[in-house]
Length: 204
Image (cartoon, rainbow, N blue to C red):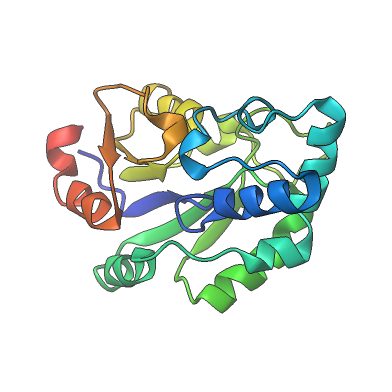
């Protein structure tokens, strides 16, 4: 069992209702109605039936400051993060958002009153352009020590479980229900995530 007290906590769809904002933009700007339960793949182009040009426009819209600030926090996350901090855990919030959203992401976290010790912008899906040195690589992330990770991305959860050998609390979402690994545990809510933290000695 690791001696680390640092917990990796993803941002979008773990702390924030990001995909629900996506669906609102999709309906308002593209006239497409897709329900949350229909988001059965992490690929938004596929799940939202957007071609490459539409997808590029869509990404621009959803990363606009006003849209990012409009996202609702996930219910029940804050009290448990508060509890973890009180118990001496260090919260590292990790996001795959573009680095250009750094300031607005900080503002959202402040307004949501979510406690954390550090915020990492990680090139989770190897999408960053050359020269974005402020974005952490997966290799750099792998050099860090965590006791547990909380994710929603099936691809990233598998990387954390296999490459970093971390117990992963996978927040249950329609796009990750096919994920399976002995270090990944599906959690229906934040209470289940907290319960997993209490038993990580049995997971590792």
